[in-house]
Amino acid sequence: MKKRITAFLLTLCIIMPCLGASAYDPNWWAEDTVRGAMEYSLISNEYGKKPYTDAITRLDFINVAVNIYCTITAEDVTSNAYSPFVDTDNVFSNMAYYAGIISGDGEGHFFPDNFITRQEMCKVITSMLSAAGVLGPYFPSTGVFDGIQDSWDIDSWARDYVAFMLDNDLMAGYDGYFKPKEYVSREEAAIIAYRCFIKYGRDVEGKIESALKEDTDSNGRRVSTLQKTVMQSNGTVIALRNAPDKQLVTSSGEVIGGGEPVVEPDPIPIPDGNGGYAPSGTPLQQPDAQGLYALKSYSETLATGEATDKEIRVFGDVGVRYNSVEEADAHMTEVVVPVWELDGNNELQTGWRKFRINSVLANDVQAIFSEIYNSPERPPIKDASGYAWRSALSSGSMSEHNYGTVIDLNYNENYCVYKSGQQIGTFYDPSYSVYSFPPTGVVVQTFAKYGWLWGGNAWVSGTKDYMHFTYLGK
Image (tube, rainbow, N blue to C red; front, side):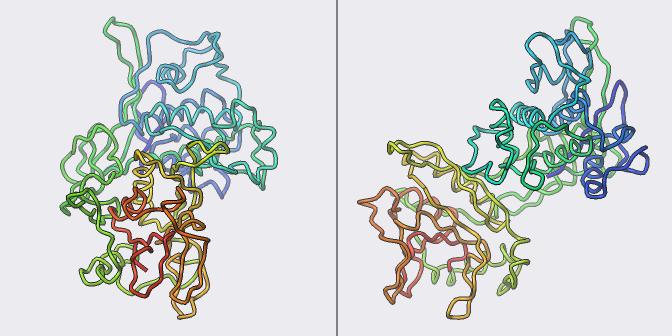
């Protein structure tokens, strides 16, 4: 996903992604990311007229934050004729206030020349993404501060904001320290801007440009408007919200994008399982008259060609596999999914489970767990594991966990029993334990809807693996 943003004052500005035009250069380890931020108009060439290693002021950072907001929403952002602050009349702080990104100190002060700390930046970025409408309710993951040796130094008001940035890989620590009260450097701010764009932006066809234009409101009062446009390959300039995506594949297989402008007010959402296809392109199962999905065996998917199609989606061809942990790691993505869990009083509460999965299936997994979480059944899920590089099995083959195409859930109460009698876990009894998954329950049924097989019935070998949900069927 890609976009661009800049922070210019009072005039139309065309962004040239050239660090050489700057008076200063970032550190070598930040150069590619800073170049990306400039290329996608998240920062401008003007940004490089101060040392990248200098601390960034609150005003300069808000300039960047407003540009990210404008790009993510693909809507023009206009200042208000009335300034909310007594210590600055800057248009970007004005826009940020009325967009709900910042609030000041409650007494009309913004402190534009103060430097911004790392924990303060976490709050601004989280507020900006929330105002842009790309965030839902957030609950910090268990152990999010594990390994952060100075977590005690994070102020109580900032802990959830810092946790969000850590959980979503927008920030990280320094050798085990987060340093919440250290100032943010200009290159660090550019890196955060780029990460936000990659995670929440939209990949459009053409070159995104920025302009800050003077105008008047309906009462003739002077206002400023930040606009994002796209220069298409044919030289036509259109509004960012009307720009076509680089490629959009419809459920019928039609490829659109890159041609005539497509009016798309909002970023195209991840398919939610209601359009006939999962995000990976896997056809969704249709329910029977009772509203249930068929629990297919691996043999059935081989016979119909489904198994072959899945291999091609994951590996690009039939019979291809990852041959080393390094190769497998490169194809994995960490997902954080919402679940229901039982607290100490056996009351349901929202929790989160984090594990790695094949990147091809990451959006499918998010959609599956969202459906399960939002279902009336609210099944508690206490254990969830996906990708794990393991030694070869006794047969010489590799576990599908090696390829990130399997998820195990609640292993103790959904045990695996091999034909030999060997078992992993303790029992399987949906009539006794809420942690055991019945065949007609929402967990098994939702995975089946998205084309995944269940180890409770997937194989003719006699093995029953009730914890096991497998995309490829093995």
